[in-house]
Image 1 (cartoon, rainbow, N blue to C red):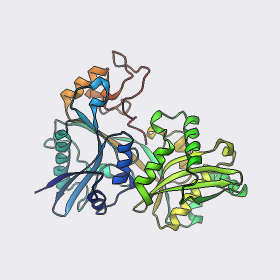
Image 2 (image 1 turned 60 degrees about the vertical axis):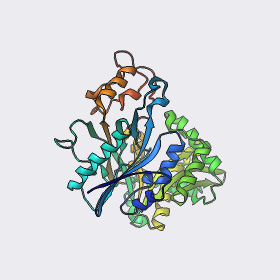
Image 3 (image 1 turned 180 degrees about the horizontal axis):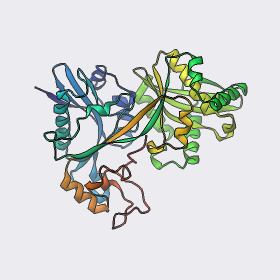
Image 4 (image 1 turned 90 degrees about the vertical axis):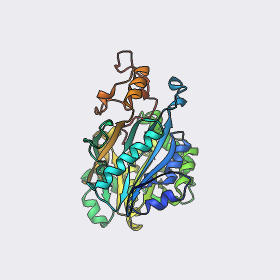
Length: 382
């Protein structure tokens, strides 16, 4: 008989359960507390167990009534933290009948909380999209949903020596890194976070230069909360020049996985390519600490754009990034989508359509795109 429980991010059992299986910083209670403190939803971990087998799915539960257009409703929806979360499991592998049972239990838990729809980002390093059974008779045919392949991400092998790693770099990248070192740039871990004000400034300016959406802007207070939430699992690395900090980044470290979470560059040093040196030194730093890989992520929205082209110079290693989207209450999904002119359930498998449709506020009466912004975050951000 399976056991089902739901934990909050304040429960010590959350991270204890994660120790049973491979996981990432994006699965931890601390990262979910950070997201909850940012107003992204209530952190939850639903756990389904049957003997020595188990599945744990971290998520954020959002109350629709906080948006004026949905005032008075008791409905919710499910989303994931920004990054690469999704479910984790132990004692079983993809295809195990237990995962069918666990999926039904997870869906039932979400529905008990009044969820109309559910969305998650998966972890391309863990391939945890394979833990979700394919929709078929007996698997909850009333759930409309799909798993979308959204594009490649890049990782660097941290188990090899510097010579082998450099051989995997693009030729131009090796030249830029060498030039940056000749110019006197060096990278250190700022264990005291003294450079946090400079990083906050550089990060904001980097987002402005890249015309990033509002969702990607964070304040110094946000970074302080992330530091408090993740503790020793988040690190500030700074690439310095005699004239100041040229680039800096926040890197998460968990279970041998280092993630390049957020990076900023000072425009005064762009000609020296400090971000390239930062990533190379982050790889060296991770190797010295015994980590397996450095994940650089993918392009904007999973696309193979200029950001992806920059990252692919570091390694030939690729991983496929997936997202999942499911309609749990078809009647309410249709009702809420009509209220804002969003798309109907027949667009749920369309990677170009915003999901869930009722969280898009920039639609005309006929459902075509109009000037506006999503009520929630852009779900295909990698």
